[in-house]
Amino acid sequence: MLDPIRRESLLVVSGPRQQCKKVNKLFAPINTADNGNKDYDNSTNTQLPRLLYRWSNADSQGINTPKHFIAGLFSDTEAPRFRPENIPSEQFDKYVLNHVSIAQETSPFISTFQSVLAPIHRALRGMEGARVTIIDSQRLTTPVYSARDLVHNNAIHIRGYSGIGEFLIWHEVRSPAIVCSFKITTLVQFAQENEEINTLLQLNRIASYRRVRGRLRTVLSREEGSMNLNHHSGQGIGRLLRFINIPQEYYQTVGEGIMRSWQLRKRGSWPEFFEGMQLGFFSMSAQWLRPMKMAATYARENELAQDIEDERDLSINEDDEEEDDDSDIDTPSPAPMSPIDTQELEELGDLIVANESPEFSETDIPESKDKFASERERIKRLLQ
Image 1 (tube, rainbow, N blue to C red):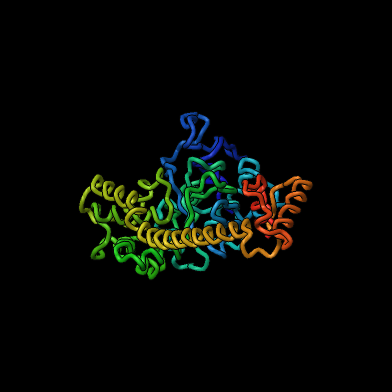
Image 2: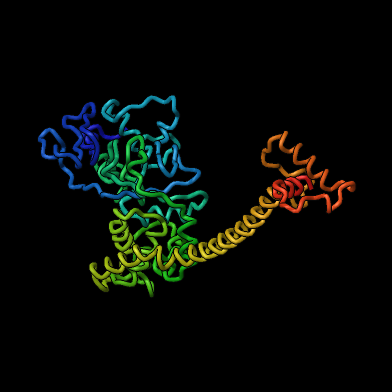
């Protein structure tokens, strides 16, 4: 059991106003205008980063989808929902201890990190279904706790763990707070196919280290060809961020976070880096994605052109067939005739028959032009 005196200084660094039983002061959310309220415990200088990073895989506790996270304790739809202020402080402390010591019990917390390096490192080492998700802390609807403050203020001692850079989100992360989510295999594939990105990120080297500590960061920063604060590195990072679908609103923050996480060598300047990143991010579709799309588009255009030609040929053939259908040439059934008065037709027929009868000779035909000649010719054509 944790020291009840130390328990009084547990701190929320984000979320609505809280009050824990057996605690004299309210937890102080740092993202509200009430920070200066004397009723809050403002004994910490912990700041909540704008972006938080999380890794998850098939074995992660709770519900983990690209658009929604639910802590293990609340993943059962029939489990009761409650907030930190609604439980005894002893129970809250137990949840904290179990979570940071990775006890085999469901937790009400969702672990996230200030640095993107830690989630990428863990995702690389737990590749099976591993994803990295970027979260906008300003859009969270539940409290966020500084793991460092909880560990320090409750005198929790775990070898190799201090809680630095880790933030614990209570209950869930809803879709509006999720900036983007990408598979670690997507990142690895992109790096393998682009030597420049592979040299910058050094994913193989990251995966070879068991923990993310000073030694790994030092190696990353000293590696020949590693990221410097210059135009070249910025352009490469910009292309990478565009590839994994980082929204335009966040690409500069994520890019800066990568440079700080990898502990870049002090060469170049931030303006130079941001200029390169902007160029890489906005030219990605034109210079990197377009060749692939252009090839596909070109092939599709050829297919469409051929389809159009085929349709034209088919249209011509269909037009010919339609003309044949309307023609009386080579048609097995009689062609439709224009309506003619039946009596007139009979009279004209009699005249035609009389004209063709052998008992009449040419000399018997009047020299004057027969007034029915034109009609006789017309009917004759119709009867053929």
